[in-house]
Image (tube, rainbow, N blue to C red; front, side, top):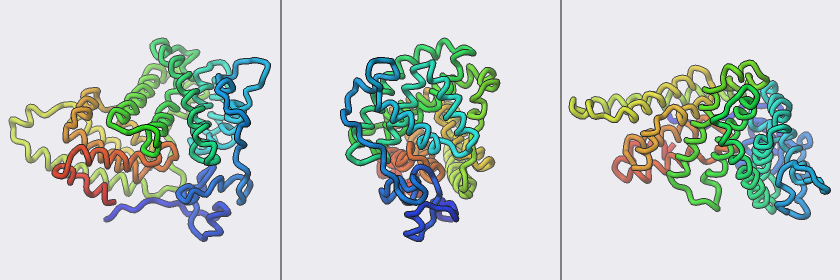
Length: 368
């Protein structure tokens, strides 16, 4: 059956959706229908728009160097910290218990480890760059990049020094970095031309997050962030199983056909990295269907081998087809502001690189 995009029923939608008499999915700080129509801040102020965050009087980079003492308060950083607590957290997680982890435990860790504070401020600024005043969006984007560029050099050396004391902050950081990277490398960012290298960079960051978990899981399970180790169910989304099952069936059929077309000699020389990537994507789609947890899709980026990433850079056809299927799954199953447009972009990127012939294997995804 044809794939249809999901929506969530609601009796408590935002004022704008009620006025337009359409379904509202109640996502905060702005629901999906209002986001698509560029209607700003639909949930601030109980069904009536609230004034968006004010534009700083002097967008000086001296004000965003971190919470580092001085004669003048870093007002822009304080604005970002408030926005993190009041709005950004609600867009990253769906369960209130795990949201509270980000508001309290993660923030407490960030007060003593500056690299974590910088990534929190970067995420908050990036969120404002998507939904704040149009005239302020470029400023918030630049602020986000500055905080991120400050955080990464502080974070990367610690990956070889994971301890019970810093593992919680490293784990939190490793969760935010892929989100930030998806948003800043996304197809909607006009200032950066997209390419396969940007996709691979995001994949590597996700793999880095998985590495932190593998090194420190026993410690994390005993700490305040243990709840973040369990992937949430998407609130109100009943179509995850349908879409994941449909895409699984399409990929399974294609994989079986490819195996049948290979003679014995080709089977013996089939690239193990490509075979592993195919089986991993099938497993992730099956897990997504079984658990109704959309975020498990991103595990595929951590599961594929380095040689698969090399195959992508070389435009190897099977690797591109798998990337297209992965993009289709993201497009239909995951609905987060920091991944907006990514699924469709991956489908189009893979199709373009495959060309008119092999690109037909992704025609269903392009036309859906």
